[in-house]
Image (cartoon, rainbow, N blue to C red; front, top):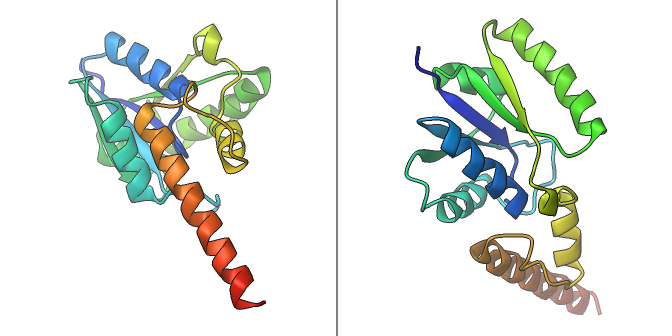
Length: 173
């Protein structure tokens, strides 16, 4: 039986912790699809298109990995992709409790869908997209936490946001 493995997430932005999980999962399976969720309920820093492009650039050296954006329910995306296995990253016991609940729901909505949980390498256990965004927004150096292309994109995005904020301030002065 062939497995179609999907690693879903918002990836806003993709971190070295994500890349760690992707690289390890790519070694375990013949093909891995990264599903980048639109997540309209989240106030993402990068658009869906930007996140897809950043991920594609970050995994170019992994020939058995593809990247696709999607909106709507994850189980609908999995079904469209003929997927049957999800990869989920776990850092904390809180992640486990949350993912365990989701896994139960996924099984109800799409029987036969399996989930495999991977923990990050120790050096990335503390890392989250939220932490990276916060450090970057406040001008901190995130180059050790994200691929180089993502660090540049964060720098550019924050410079643009600072420029827009300053322009608005000047307009009301």
